[in-house]
Image 1: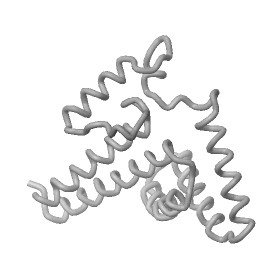
Image 2 (image 1 turned 30 degrees about the horizontal axis):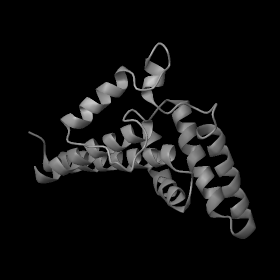
Image 3 (image 1 turned 60 degrees about the vertical axis):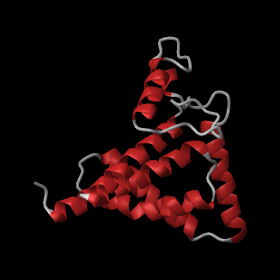
Length: 167
């Protein structure tokens, strides 16, 4: 049997996971905006805490990089802030929006021909159905689009937190 304090910790962990997945969903589906920067700022301290006990130098460096990035942006105002945000938007566009950008559908990576709507697409659709998640008609991307997969992970984590709350 799990103690009440352990249950509370697990609930907090799953709630935090849901928040991280929601943020990652936003990263892959929207150009950085004020909501993005607020979410990133809110997560920066938690990332530092979560990575303090690890020997993974890349993870530590990434968490510190997020904290430095948000601290630098939060000190800016006016034209400097506008220039910073424009540069970030340009980098985002280069990474995710141009024709030679990073593919964001899982099936591109898992199919031998690097095509969309492969086996992973079918598996994701089946998982969504199994857990009662239906794709919104407003979403034009395939079910194996990384942002949509992060929404699914956020839902599962939130469901776990809710189950623990009710336990």
